[in-house]
Length: 263
Image 1 (cartoon, rainbow, N blue to C red):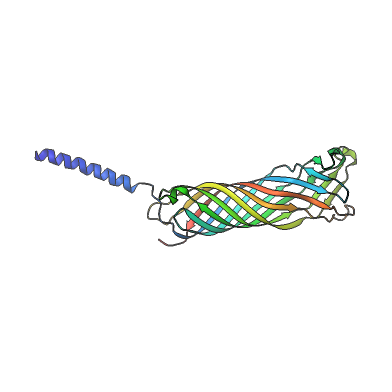
Image 2: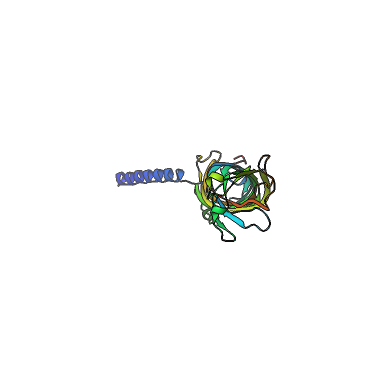
């Protein structure tokens, strides 16, 4: 009887040890309440909507298919994590140079594109200041896992810098195509974004939390437009509406978030 009891106790000890080991190795996130810093890098895919220009009063509006391009993206942010599924931050983002050029696709008076112009040169970069709010639904329900998917939305302002841009007239007559280049321009616009992603706390329990984040976000950076003054040697006369388009981006990024409050 004593021998059987010892055997049962030994088995219980092994089970208890295994259970304790499992609990110790459970993926439970460390406390991240309080202020944090975040840094991320990625790539932005441009999508220029409603590209257009109008040469002068009485002339038709020319619409362009400004081809999509991709460029670099970087962001730095300071925020606060309430660790109840919500956090907020103020972020500074930078979108690298991307080309904004393409052919005529339609004309407001239905005349042929071959009688008008293409955009053969030009680029844009943007700097954005935005307030972001994050919502992690699992954390909001009390889940303390190291892996947390989230939704994000933000509003702010963008500074869109359009480079010198070039209009190539008469695409139907390549031998007699006059090119005109105009100065660049900078606009400040209202901007907004929405997106989703996931955060994964990679630090060990008891260590200062370090969190890796991957996300996809859609940015509407407002309207961008080139300058209307032709460069020297490019003729006289300013267009009524210089090259103008909606500057929207899709961003895929990977970053790191570090809580600033000491353990």
